[in-house]
Structure formats: structure tokens, C-alpha cells
Image (cartoon, rainbow, N blue to C red; front, top):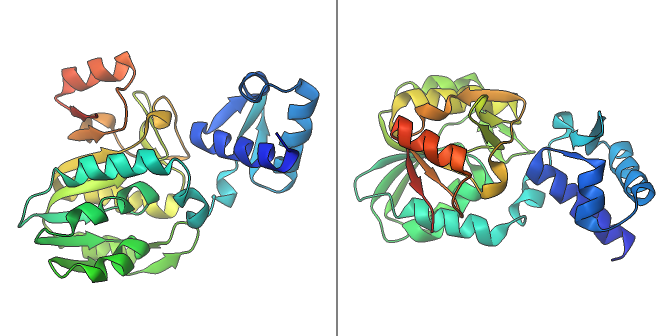
Length: 250
């Protein structure tokens, strides 16, 4: 594998897992520790990653941009989006979160009659093609790294809405730390949505389990349903059973 391609894949691998050891990178990419150190140093120098003891982690001060994340694990996101969209019914009032996975719900909502509140800029733009979807924007400041609207205006507006089903994204989930997110600007919005919704659906791929990010926006047992692309680890299956959380996967 050529160096530039390997470094790009290494960046994506770390972003999927939040934090990895140098030994794990050696094994996954089948290269020497010296090669891993050189590649990692380039990513650290660019500001994408930061060094931690024994490895590297995501540098949350330089969030990966929305358009870069959009193409990562696309087939998994499309499957999750399809499963999540099947949980909606005509007449529902939905909240659709920012993120690239929630965006994949849209093609499967095209024939439905729904009211949707969202801070997802791309969702708002692309939903114009579907006349059955009534779209309300949360407003606020456009956060360019995540293509989402954030700020106190968004939170104040959300307090007024009665949401039947919320579809949420996360950069990492753990039993100890709950449902987490990399962007502090989005965390208060997500927390408000969980409190205001009758049911909360968490859309994550299997790489997000046992990971956590900078901020926690709700406990795992605040979630009604976890929508994912593969059966979660046994600890999460047991936790879901104990706390009445539905697991939805192929």
C-alpha cells in the first residue's frame, strides 16, 4: 500500500475507534512500529490526531469535517438509515440529528407524511425534493465542521416542540460514560432533544460501542432503541434487556 493511502486509512481507523495503540495500528496495517510512528507523526503534526500514552487519539479541537465523514462506512450508514426510517409512521413529529448517519434516513422517508425538526443542514437542503416532509429548522449558528445549526437559539426553540421520535447520532457509546459526542456546541441540543422526545433512537455502527468522546449528552438507559448494523457486544445486549432498550439490527 502506498504511503499516502495508508495514512488516510490510518486517520479513518483512529476516527472510528477514537483512541488506538501503536501496537494495534501495527497489527491492523501490517507494518513495522517505525513505520507506524512516522505515519502517526505526520497526522499529529497536521493536527488531526494527538499522542496519548502508548498510542494516539482523535484531536477533538480539530473535528473531522462533515464531507470527509460522509463517505466513511457509507454502506453501514445506509443500512442503519433504512432501519431507522422504518420506525417512522405518517403523522409523526420527528427530530433528526446532525450527522452523516441520520442523513441516510432521508431516501426512505420520501413517500411519508411527516413533520421534521432538524439542525442538520444537509438534511434540510436535500428534503426539498419530498413534498410530504414538513421541515422546521432549529436555526442558530452554522457549525461548518458538522454542517449543523448550534447555539442557544436552537435550544430555546426546541423547548417549544413536542417530539414523538428523535433520531440521534453519537461518536461513541459506553455503559459507563453513556452516549457521547465530540462537539460541545451540539451536546446541549442533543440533551434537550432526549428530554423533549417520547422516544429516542440512537443510530450508530458497531465501531462506536465501548468508545467515548469529549462530552456525554445522555445516559445509555435514556435511549429507547439502538439502531445499528450488527449485533452489539454481549454486555450491551444484556444491558438493553435489563433496561428495556430495543436493539434493532439486521
